[in-house]
Length: 124
Image (tube, rainbow, N blue to C red; front, side, top):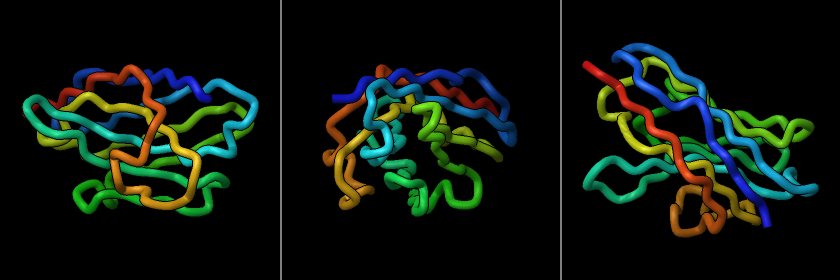
């Protein structure tokens, strides 16, 4: 098992930046694929970004490519999402998530460990 706690959400103006952090428990953090998934009001959850065990590979949904960067520090059991050039459509609750295997990384249903979420609101 892994326990996840997000932080860093808040209110920011369009064009601004925000960095989300996710602290993970456990002795085997490096054995988990880590992802960020978001859910806007009235919308289904959607994949944002993922990073593989070692951090060698990252994946993003098209709408955030070039703006968001996912990274991980296995020594600190922490994953980050740096969000730049934020847009109002990025407004959502952002969840830190984890899964065991390096496949189906853009499938929200493949992630079976979830944090409580942190609210990101981007004003125009």
